[in-house]
Image 1: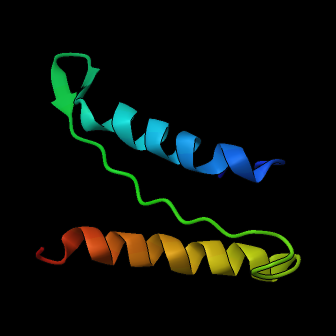
Image 2 (image 1 turned 60 degrees about the horizontal axis):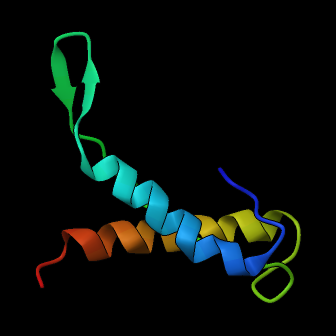
Length: 71
């Protein structure tokens, strides 16, 4: 979970996280494929307090569904 104080950083950070996870990670003698689903919510536009996490969670699962659905 990452909280960002300024909105102009969010997309570059999400893209950097996704890009870093595209390469397999090495652990001992194994290579591990890792994927991330990223959901973002903006305070106060999307929600306030606890609802903000729910909004980001819904967007993360939508991103995951979009990644799995064919083209």
